[in-house]
Length: 244
Image (cartoon, rainbow, N blue to C red; front, side):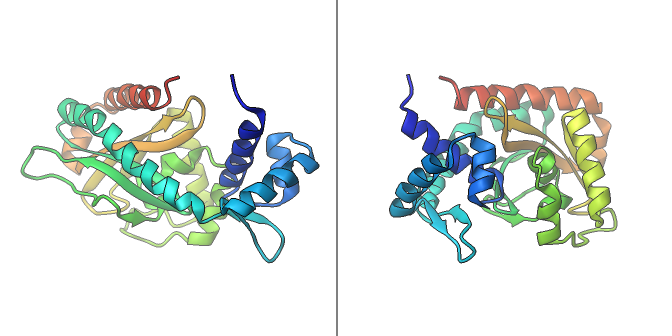
């Protein structure tokens, strides 16, 4: 049993999130299907509590009060993810990571390192642009505003393999959606390859799970087999986090 007003307030917050953190009244209405009057009343309450703010152009944006909740949730997500990342390390022998999207940036929130002497590290808390990482591609693959994200951030070249054109990047996201996983073949750091898959909350992607290592070791593994291992662990994690 749900409380309708709470359910609708969460719909409004999710609509703002899906529009990159800010949206107009008409965009919120289109996403939620709620009447304008209902949305306005909900927004007034969220504004008063600091969960939403109104910009100078009268559009609404996610508010600072969400930072406190988001920070705590992110820390818990890292704790919950650790045993699943450890499973990936056991299966692949490579470093396993969990990342989320914060605004236009990818943030690594958890990691279990490979036991091998030569291994990869992505520092927990590190923020990177999404275009040159497998986790970033996964996190943007289902986003309708991916092109706008790339326009805002630009596509700076990290290595000679980095995709630096928006059109080519959108084609890459098409491939990610089609095959269900993303690859970073030395696009963020030369000699390092990575595969990532989405973690779903029952429908949408809320995180990305990946393994990364030296190119020769990652390339030696049959790609679809590695993707299947990643998907199984990511699906188990998503189910555990969002189980009723």
